[in-house]
Image: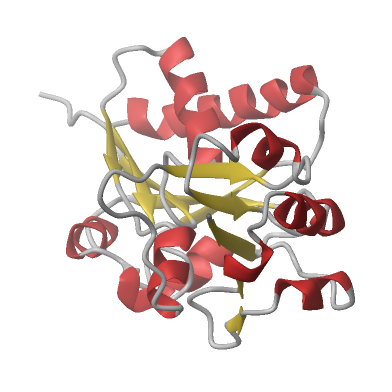
Amino acid sequence: MDKKGKLYGIGVGPGDPDYLTIKAVNILKKVDAIYCACSTKNRHSIAYDIASKYIPENTPIKFLPFPMILDRDKAENYWENHAHKVLDDINNGKEIAFLTVGDPLTYSTFGYLMKSIKKIAPNTDIEVVPGITSYQAAAAASNTILVEAEEVLTVISGVKGGEYLRRLDGLSENIVFLKAYKNIDDIILALQETDRLEKSIAVIKCGFEDEVIIKDIKILKKEKPNYWTIIISKK
């Protein structure tokens, strides 16, 4: 009987290699190949860098370029082409791992790949291995309670600035901004408008050696944050 292939979506956590789960490490040691997302400009993968110490030297590493574009049709063409590449390996009986920073089902490239694979080959064997999210690690690094008692926790993207915070302020005591870098000025303004500024913190490059915790969010108006910036805001 031919060996049946399988896809593992593995979350490698936010940056510290020690955050990988034992299950993730065990799978990385046995798979036939590993896929990583990268930019269309290079073959660099932060997810691979994080997990590399657990990957056997002879394991093939394959890079899938994902462009940062807003055109949905063009993006879906990339996802579909990548899905076919991964399925070629799976259909040949290989067990494949796709690495993603943080968690595979939280603002992750893996979600797009998985949807495309399910659309093309619905019966594909897929197993997701959860990873520690950046905001969980940021809360731990800053000793910040994310949520307690009957409170609500809301996780939003900061790409549209403070728009979602203004909508949700009265509905959620605790709000996490991921990707809080592009429209930081409007995020800070929204935090001021909702009386949250003094109870908010930012964590930059959480889990990496150059991690920074910022307790005075206003600093970010002068020192613009990079892509790996998280804001935890409490009411």
